[in-house]
Amino acid sequence: MSRLELPEGCVVIAFISQRSAEDQGYARMAERMLALAAEQPGFIGVESARGSDGLGITLSYWVDQAAAAAWGAHPEHREAQRLGRECWYLWHVTRVAQVLSTRPVGGVTPP
Image 1 (cartoon, rainbow, N blue to C red):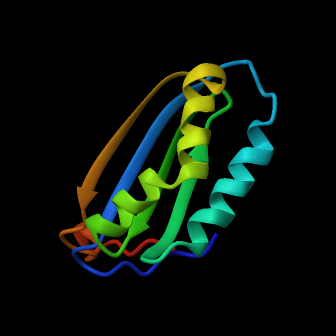
Image 2 (cartoon, helix red, strand yellow):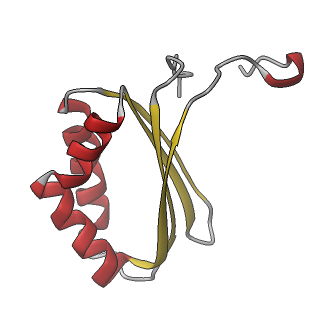
């Protein structure tokens, strides 16, 4: 994965989740959501990781709060959220933050 270049002030949606054993349609829906998000105005990019224990963190980046909110309200995304609550996640939390700086911490530049 290439490193994203993020503008200061952009909005980060952090989606942290614990997957259930249920997988009916999850991979297909995740792929569709990534493609759909990339089509939305204000989308910058996404970074995601999931451990073998099912714990995952997905960070999506948006130019501003309005673009992030529009994504959250998109009808297909709302359906994916419903299915996530009902089928795919034991628990999840969404956090919204703003990027204050893109400077390396402690002088270390990531690869």
